Length: 127
Figure (cartoon, rainbow, N blue to C red):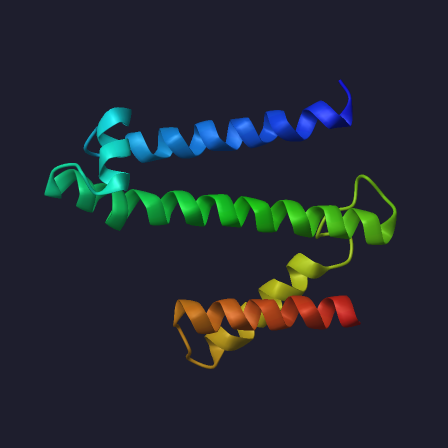
């Protein structure tokens, strides 16, 4: 399969996954009701479920997947190694050390732990 066909197929798969994530959950909402909720024409409960719970979840999932794919591609391109992974340069270990340092200082907030892990990963890459 040529590269020209792969990207449109993957975009279609992403759109199908997002559509499924908007319909599936604790309260099953049919796709037609999701569409009405997205346009603000559905009943109040469906609109709230779609906009308050499912759209943020789907958007965050898509953004995290895009970020992970981008970082993996960047790492592979920089190292010129198609098998490169975060463990190769110690990025994951540095992130773990950063999180442990922040945690041992008594800061248990998820945001502060994430920032500490990010700082540790950057320090490992810099070294």
